[in-house]
Structures are given as C-alpha cells and as structure tokens.
Amino acid sequence: MNGYSLKWRLVLSITIIFVLLWSFVFCWLYFDLAKRLQNTLDERLSASAHMVIRLVQQLPLQDMHSTLQHETPDINHPNLIACEVSVFSSNIAIEQKIIARTRGAPENLQTQKTGFSTWRYQNTEWRSYVIQKGNIQVVTAEKLQLRYSLLKQILQSVLIPLILTLLLCIILILWVVRVEFMPLQNISNTLIQKKHNLSESARYLIELKSKNIPKEIQPFVDNLFDLIQQLHKSLENEKSFTAFAAHELRSPLTAIKTHVQLSKLMLSQAQMTDHPAFKNIEQAEHSINRYEQLLKQLLLLSQMEATPLQHYAPVYTDIAHSLKHVIHELEQLYPEISQHLKLSKESDEKIDIPETELEIILKNLIENAYIHANSPHPIEIQLLKGKLLIIDHGVGLADDEFNLLTQRFWRKSSQNKGHGLGLSLVKLILERYGYSIQFSHNEPQGLKVTIYTDRQK
Image 1: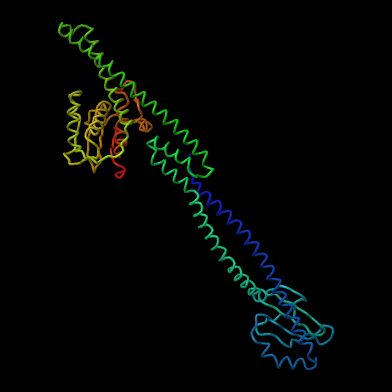
Image 2: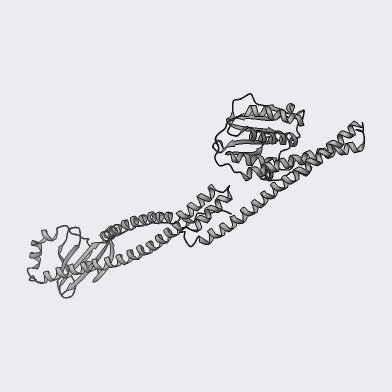
C-alpha cells in the first residue's frame, strides 16, 4: 500500500481551491470590466459627437465652411478620437460635403450608419458613433485596439497583485500547515528513534497523553499506546518463558547427560562397545549435545534482550585474530573444516564489537556456511574496506527466503541440522553495536553474507 503525505495533500488541495476560486473571480472581473469599459468609452464617443455638433450649430451656415477651414489646423491635431464634420446640400441627403476631419481619420466615416457601430478599415477595427441634426452630421470614432490596450493595462494592474497575493497565501499555508503538523512529526520521529525499545515507546506515549495535543490525534495516541502495551506485555511474557524454560531445562539435561556419559563409560569398561545399547547411548549423547547447544543459545538470546545496551565504549577487535580462534574451536567439531575455508590475506582490519560477541557471530556464520553449502568449492572469508564477507558456492536460497533467514526457529528443511537460532542471535548482536547483516546471491551460485555499518552501505 503506497503512502502519501497528508501535509502536502492538504496544501495542494487548498492551493487548487484558491486557484479555481480566484480564476473564477478573475474571469468575472474581466467580463464585467470589459463591459463597463465598453459602455464608458461609448459614452465618451457619444459625448464628443454631441459636443462637436452643438459647437458647429452655433456657427452661421453660410460662414460654417470658411470658419471650420480656418480652424482646421487645430482640429487636425492628432487625437485618440477621430472626428468628421459634414453638411448636406439640401434636406434630402443627395450630396454630402465634408468640411472638417481630424488627422488619421479613416476615409469612410461619412458612410457609417447612425448610432453606434463596429467595423473594419484597412485591417483595423473601429468603433464609431454617428449623429445628425438638420444638415449637419458628426461622426466620432476610435480604434478598438486602444480599448484592448487599456483593458489589458487595467487587468495587469489587477492580475499582478492577485498572483503575488496567491503566492503569499501559498507560503503562509505551508507555514501554518507545517506548524500545525509539528506535533505529529515530533511523535513520528520519536517513535522511530525508540522503535527498538517498546518500554521507552510506551513511556513516551504515557507522557504524551498528559500533554496538550490536538483532539484529532488523541484517539490515535490512545490506541497506539494500548497496542504497544499489549505488544510489550506479550514480548515480555515470551522472553520470560524462554529464559525460564531454558534455565529450568538446563539442570535436568545436565543430569541426563551425566547419566548417559556414566553408562557409556561403564559399557566401555565392560568392553561392550559393539553392543547395540552402546550405539543407542552414543546417539542419545549426540542428541543431548544438540539440545544443550539450543539451551545455550536461548539463554544468550534472553540475556541480551533483557539487558539492552545503554552506553557502550568502543572496543575495536582484531577480526583476523578472532577468526583464528573461531576456526580452532570449529576444528574440534569438524576436523576438516580448515581445508574448506579460504581466508583473505592477513589484515589489520578491526571492528567495533567485543571479542566474545564477535566470535559468536563468526562461529555461527562459518558453521552455517560449512553445513549447508554442500559444495566442493571452499568458503571465502574476506575483509574488504571495513566489511566482512562470507561467501559460499552452495545451492543458495530463493529470493523469498532471504527475509526468513533471521526469524527464530526457521529452517529451510526439517532435515537440516541446527535449531534456527544462530542467525537470529547474530542479527541481535550486530544491531546492538550498530552493524547490519545482508544476505544476497553469489553469482553464479551460492550465498554471500555481508556485515557492515550503516555508513558503509
């Protein structure tokens, strides 16, 4: 199941809502402003035409042409509004004579219909207003491009602050969301740091319940606390049972082992080593040794889990020296094991793990590789840039079996030797000292085990 960030999802949702809302407002503002601007400028055209025709009507008709021609230099001064004044020769518009026109005015102003109209002249759109009183006609016009330019400038003056305000709102939303989500982030970070210690996690949640936290996450904290309490109680019971069972079984097993060894000694003294009872006693002694090893591992696991490492002073152990000691011990159980090992050259590599724990790790890994590889090729033990690699050329494992290797009591087959606790113990020791273990395929065949610190990954 893929996760998602509630914080970023909230910010994105609010931002989209703001953008959509402000886009709607901007479109509304645009159409309303365009309509009002159109009406206002149309009123200006109309007012200009009415003003001109009132001024022209005050002139005597017979002197109108000479007077306007005399004023032409002023009328022809460049203007945003084009204007044209014309007179008719009679009441019937048979002949129309232009007596004044502003500079840059289009040629077909006198042909426009009365009132407002929009038309095109030489690839330029014009808006005109025509008024006629008596024998006088006045036409005022302006380019629509000027209106578009004015509307664009007005919208820019509105849009730029709108965009800046939107960006400022997004920044404020990010800040507010970050501040309000800080309790959740702190809870998450603290639980991640304490994930390996359920007691500290439970203690932290107890302290958290008494603090001022949002009501929305209060049920989550309560349920999480109850869950951790139950898990902690279950694990403590499991640890107690393991330690108690291993401790209580150790004494009877030692007594049984003593009686078996005594019986074996008596049969040997009676020269009855060929008797079937002697072989049964040897088999019983072998089984007792296996279960004795199992109890030792269970006790070691319970002791390590019961005493978590609090403060540890670094102790650097020589890996090569520990390897020699481990191989010497394994030779007591497997006399030919040294012939199946291929060690790298002597090295001064050291590891930040005490010698006793390091020997437990090496013994389990090398013994597992020797027992389960079933390959004529030697097992390689390499020291490479602070990493310890144990490589075999055996049958290897399937991909889905890698995650099961460190589970307690897991064995690939019931026919395999061992109890499924060795790798669990190795992983627990490595984690106590800040190391990790990785299992991977060894091409073309076999298994590769790598021990490294997190900074070497």
